[in-house]
Length: 400
Image 1 (spheres, rainbow, N blue to C red):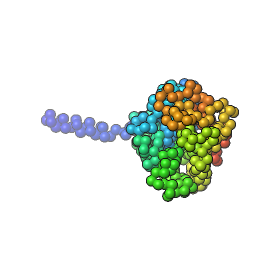
Image 2 (image 1 turned 30 degrees about the horizontal axis):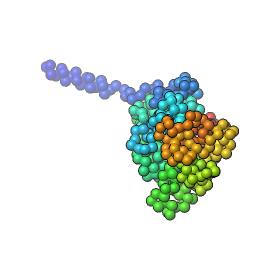
Image 3 (image 1 turned 60 degrees about the vertical axis):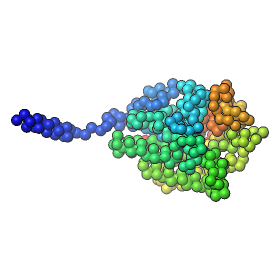
Image 4 (image 1 turned 90 degrees about the horizontal axis):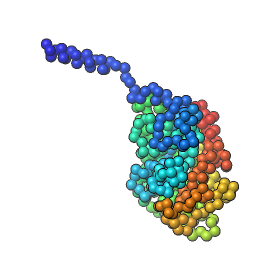
């Protein structure tokens, strides 16, 4: 009798549990936070002291900012990898908001930090630096990895990195996570209304073409190599479009022919940039701009813009005094002629004031240059860089 009673009670409990309505893994309040009118969740990096949490809950122009790229926008991915390409020690980060190294290859902020604040968002955390909770991902993630290139093996001599293709896969996995956690429509709304920022390609020259890896220079003339890179990037953008990525900022390449590393390598004495290298960069940017114009027509629901970093950077180098710089050839941190021989390794190798330098280390600009370039991406404040529109026009004039 007691046994039959126990079985009956178990059946009632099981029926009650099964008949309860399904509760999503995250509350509706979190799903609603895709809307810019609600306050954002915390992230691995706090907003800058001048931009309080309250400020971006009222002014957020997009739900999130996602970043794919290389060391120009890496905010800490490589801190978790076995690689020589790391920026997790001082003097990197000495002029950042926390005055501590974060993994950014700069003395302070990188361009996407400034753009996040422009969009009304907190600084975007590294994909590898968060714990997978939607609350830490819903306002954006940074997948960028120093050393990464469009070609899978570019930069591999430095150690581990997350390649371009792998970053796209990480973004796809994140999108799937959003679908499971928030529901399909909420995930589509989040991704389609957010901005994806892509800054990659320079390592395919620094660590592949210019080093003639696999005898590539005999297989491809620079123009053919540029076409190959652009076609690969084009296909990945289309893949991202197929998972509802609609707003994309594609950055061109910087004038690395003016970087301290190549001024040292080519034993430049007059401060002139290496023309052959810069010509390759300009050709790539030309191909990319044309490719983006074609993609805009091919993908009618997209809003893709191309921003020519070469143009903006050369305007700074040529008109350095107008921008407040007095050193355009020597890095702030490094050793050797132009401080371009040995990478930045210790505080003793750095100058006292990076704000008047264009270059922070062998290849990367200072925080001051990043701020100017970010302004140009946002609204062309100092020089026109973006085509057919700037980022402000993209997000303000959109139907979000």
